[in-house]
Amino acid sequence: MIKTLRVILSALALCVAASSAHAADTKKVDVLLVGGGIMSSTLGVWLHELQPDWSMTMVERLDGVALESSNGWNNAGTGHSALAELNYTPEKADGKIDISKAIEINESFQISRQFWAWQVKQGVLKNPHSFINSTPHMSFVWGDDNVRFLKKRYEALQASPLFRGMQYSDDYDQIKQWVPLMMEGRDRKQKVAATWTPIGTDVNFGEITRQFVGYLKTQPNFTLSLSSEVREISRNADGTWHVSWVKLHSDEPPQSVDAKFVFIGAGGGALHLLQASGIPEAKDYGAFPVGGSFLVTDNPDVVKQHLAKAYGKASVGSPPMSVPHLDTRIIDGKKIILFGPFATFSTKFLKNGSYFDLLKSTNTHNVAPMMRVGVDEFPLVQYLAGQLMLSDDDRFNALKEYFPNAKKEDWRLWQAGQRVQIIKRDPVKGGVLKLGTEIVSSQDGSIAGLLGASPGASTAAPIMLNLMKKVFKDKVATPEWQQKIRQIVPSYGTKLNDSPAKVVEEWTYTSDVLQLSPPPKIDVSVPSQATGTAPARPAKASADMAL
Image (cartoon, rainbow, N blue to C red; front, top):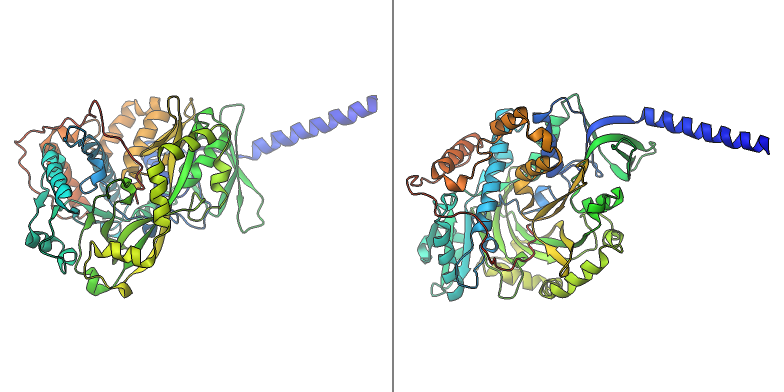
């Protein structure tokens, strides 16, 4: 009996010793970034600017960064600033146009412009034309009701200096000057209208990501681990996080770190990892994946006739994600045109994910909210079912509504990325489909993740700034961080919407540094007449795929 007890105690001692040795061997880092996309890379650059002595490790499942949603071919590359996207300006029951969301989106994108401009000045981002290019943003509609709506929208937006310089026309010849490809072959008797603004942009978020990570790799405190799939996230006794991953397609042993802070910026994979961490804040969330495909042409004779991102209006009863747009894209220096998106469905949460993603994310905490949303959002279910039944002819006919002279042989269908819509438990409704992006973090701020889609990459800089305010609250409040943030984002802490002069100053500065077209001239003596606050009874929101 005594001998047996000695053996057991010896074994326990060996286990404890091995555990202690393992803990001693585990690399310690200040920050672990899970995912190699625009969000993680943006946060990495922010933190390097603000706290260059912090050590960082980035873990990416694929064999390169920016190969999922951030990749230029997996999104529409719109610099979302609500210049053209009609779903950001809903018409209220009293007939007035609510522009509060549009102001919010535009203000956020100005922060992104300033952040990128600063990185160009620091040499972190090279050759602005490789990742951002001036591309006019347009809204284009037809039919009496839609023309009426667009004119009201245009007039409402003039209350904010952020939208001045926008032009409106319902004249065939004027619109043809802006977008000849969309007007040639169109019946001149058709009632159409458009808005056009020159300050819009096309953005290659994949290129920004690659340049950000390329810069971080030159820093001594940064490590990148590719082809690495996170398999375990657990809390250590000291409050840090033990994260382990395996090297895919390799016989290397698993690797791990103990991190003071973990950011999960894994796109559609973020929910599963947040759930694996065990934090109670992740229990209320479920997700619904929606994919998107586009018709694409690179025919030079077609491409040269179109320089715009032209957004239409969703059909009556259809969700905003059905809004078609005909987009100029510049990817890796080549100009192309996209038309779409057409919704697709897969149970994968990532384009390179698993068909079991949806099933693995479902648990006893979120299954009821997900079922509730399926009932409440039945129009969305109907829309997706209809999209899945579209034929090639159906998609081409949709294109011809925007490009009457289109030839089928010039276009091919391209499957873009996956977007995961957030479903959250609601005490009243049971479950709701959440719009936008949402930061989910532990109570102590030691781990955080980003869920959702719209407006996504366009607002990576302000989203990560908001995340830092939440998880590094004390640091953000210090004079050192405050001074640096204001150096990077001159408008930080102010509302551009309240000052036409500041809008012009910011437009001019960022357009110059980012080598964009000169901004429109506006009368700075005319004060803003828009508060940017949400109305007392906002219009019902709907899901937005934000491709």
